[in-house]
Amino acid sequence: MSKQTAAAARPLSPHLQIYRLIPTMVMSILHRITGGALYFGTLLLAWWLIAAASSEQAFDIANAFFGSWIGRLILFGYTWALLHHLLGGIRHLIWDTCTWMGKETSTRLAWATIIGSVGLTILVWFAGYAARGAF
Image (cartoon, rainbow, N blue to C red; front, side, top):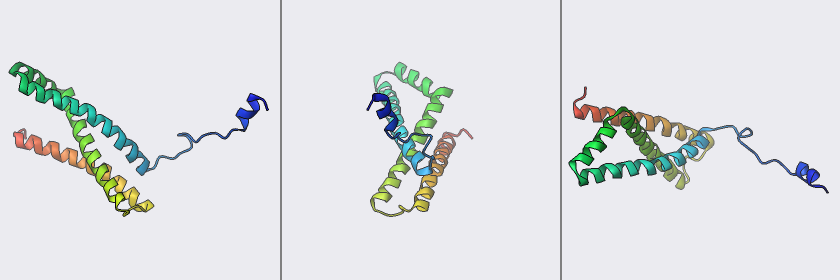
């Protein structure tokens, strides 16, 4: 059997064009992405804490960065990633008890995770600005 014939007879692996994205699949992917994002966001949090412990000048530089529009956007994304990862972890904890594992229930739980994370992020930022007296 030649190499060309052997290659043609081998089955093709499934790929993204074969699979239809479903909410639980998207939540699994987002859970992994937010876990990685939290790693880098925590490095920024450590930078801020080290700057606070170092000197007033270093702390002013860190605060200027986090007070800029890009810094606030990063903090907003970090807040969402933290809350999404938390709710995803709770979802997996529920599944560890072998409950709510049906197709419809797990899909509803996936939607609740995304809606809850967005809603809680907005609530946290609203409460933060309200406590600051920005309204």
